Length: 114
Image (cartoon, rainbow, N blue to C red; front, side, top):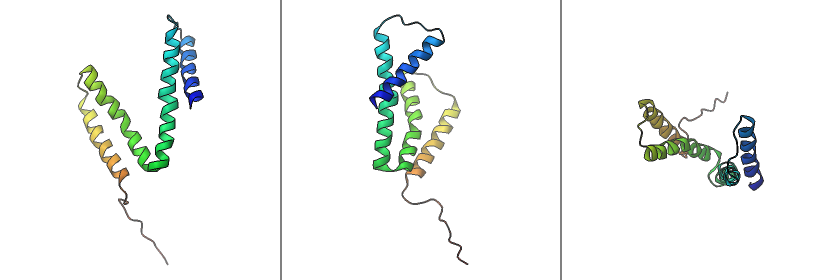
């Protein structure tokens, strides 16, 4: 997890340098490596751990809602209202996550025994 996260950050540094960005302060390298560790390394660790505890379907449903949590946080931080389509997508995503998290199937499969 640590190695994957650090190499993710290192890859970001290499891509930034390749497109012409420059490192102005040394501590920014450690900040990028830390973000890679948290955003990639820890997220994979917690995702796999959640799959073990909750199962693949529920974990995927909860994980799919995370972009909306990020958007909600950006609404709070930046105080800008999104387009109305955001709220439509939010309602659809919430309904999909709720349906995916249910223990019973929505449609029953019929056995056609001849």
